Image (cartoon, rainbow, N blue to C red; front, side, top):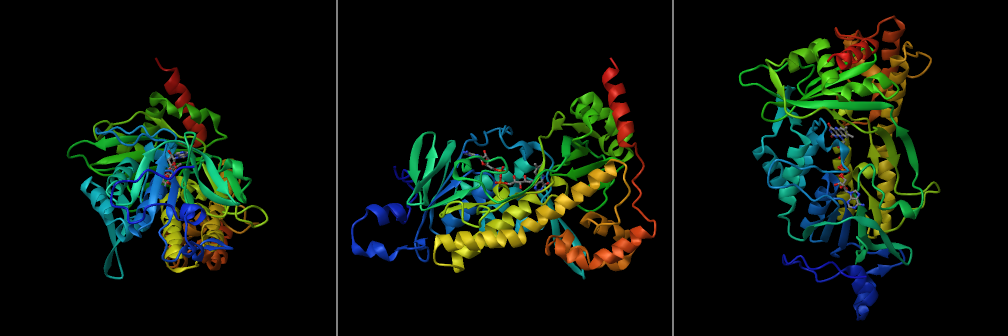
Length: 487
Ligand SMILES: Cc1cc2nc3c(=O)[nH]c(=O)nc-3n(C[C@H](O)[C@H](O)[C@H](O)COP(=O)(O)OP(=O)(O)OC[C@H]3O[C@@H](n4cnc5c(N)ncnc54)[C@H](O)[C@@H]3O)c2cc1C
């Protein structure tokens, strides 16, 4: 096993704590090594981060600011000098994104330079007035713009190295994480943080993690456009974008920076006909047929700047830090970001849950327990309490939506899913007055429980949300068939 090459940035500590403990001379070493593993208070750790996506770069930079010595390894080559960044293996990178204020807040707290770079690159904070005060409610930006900003700030952080390589697996020593294997070479670390995303496989050899959920039965297909000079944007259903449920599908439009915007059609994966939306002729025909999308994408108003982008399988999945018996998968290894939880993206929650996790982990490392194992266990408990409910919320929403997309009425024999409780606010203003903390993710899904009976009464009274004007999913299938049959 070898230590990471020195980053040459004046790192305040010459080697790994673990290596020092295990190999180094002197009795003073032993004050760090305890029955619970590596003690962390006042000790500079050697940290290996798997993945230099949002979670990896953010937590890596934040730990490096705390004088830990961090190396983030990513198989991706990184952004080139031009505008292109293929970012293979991160399917969502090219898909429509919107950013909640928690993402901006996290950057301002830990990586203010990244926030500045983001704004310099055109990101547009959106504000709204609440109780007479202006508050940020989101940031309009493409994902590529966000990640470029994050990366350009991260490369300037002392004690953080970003290395290209594929992490093949996690090294263990005495039952603890001891480093990572990168392209066949072993590197030591006191703490390994797995930020390898929703499809990460670096830890697969370590045994099964406690897992809830699976595929959500929904697929994305989207395309980016730019508004022509002087053209006005299309309809918005809220200050962040346009979101509407139609008969058998959903439509989202997210404005980004510099008059760019993404249009998304969200379909059931069971609707095989709509797979053909990946063809530009089919996508364009459908965009013309849905009035709100037609307004946004009218060729006189906007021009496409990408091809049609079909998405891979979307998931509602929670994976804990521990196995089914509640034992940490590996002491000294922490999973973070999408490696812990992913939710259907239509509510734009993924980067917020990622930043919430990073913030909590940093708080535990800063002020909490004295040992890494305690951090792992406490973080696991926090994830169960704060992250799992969001995944379960989306599972309930998506299951109920699949039923409705299959032609069933709202099932009043069960508790209503959160999206329908929110919809009922259109009829019962007392619901509307109390859903804000859920919508803004200041409170979890259980904050809606007290409103369920009121929403239930709304639906039991025969009301249901009317979709905006537009074709049904069955009619979309016909439009797609005709478009593809046309010469
Ligand atoms: C279609 C779609 C749309 C979305 N829209 C939104 C949105 O609007 N708003 C929002 O907040 N969230 C959205 N999300 C969620 C958001 O994209 C994720 O929450 C976010 O990417 C999580 O960041 P991460 O760093 O945990 O993982 P990732 O972004 O997946 O990064 C993981 C990194 O690990 C690297 N990696 C993986 N394995 C290895 C290995 N073995 N060796 C080396 N490197 C490795 C990868 O190359 C990658 O760089 C969306 C997700 C999807 C699928």
